[in-house]
Image (cartoon, rainbow, N blue to C red; front, side):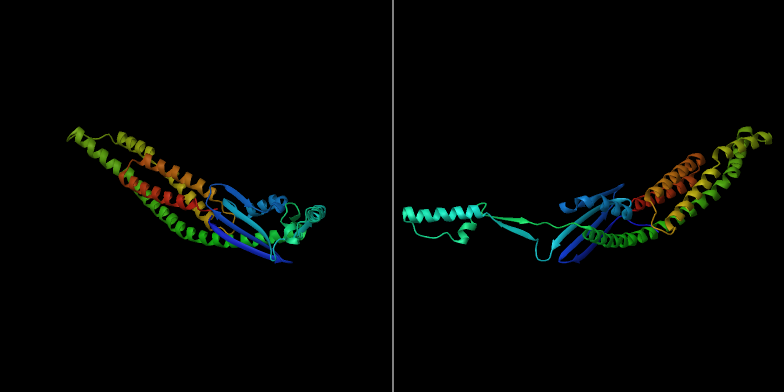
Length: 296
């Protein structure tokens, strides 16, 4: 089973009027990266949350947003500067008594004076219960991300397996054509030597066999074809094995090895038909490589 790297999930929990909202978005990235936006009150919990995300996400970039909201608004404390308000009231009385001014200092007017009233948020008490609630909410979001990435992985797998089958088929064609190279080389040598020696002159069978054997050795791709078949099978097993621990980088390594073997086959054979088959295999490998970059 393989997982893609693109996903989105949302989790929500509520307790005693406090709502915990978590959103997780994952996108393609060569390495594992976690970006978090969390309230300052949860700063001490961030390392644990990062580990929780990294364990589930693997390769790719994860953007995590955590919000804490009270249904009735954030609790707060209202503090009145009684000394200041009393001083203002005394000042108003003096103005009436000494200058004969009219009017009273009412509550609305007092509230408009700077520092007369201070409103402070009491914040959110972060205890073990809240920390557990945040982890549960994050896990809910991660489960939704996992489901979406699993769907993407199924689509990737449906594309990759036929391409591996095609590579195996092309490899079989190369093997069949490579088996004909020594016989074709013998016929060409015999024809060429006959033209050079002219009629009535016999060929040296021993020398001819030696040249054919040398050519067969130089163009022999048996080892490369065996290794290529092994890498194709390893990739197939890696993609279809049970579990979610498939790592895209392991697939990339196998693709590199397949490319190395097919390049060697093309260089050693020097035969037109095999060259065409090599190009087809390299095209399939490139398409597979593009898809593997989407595997977590």
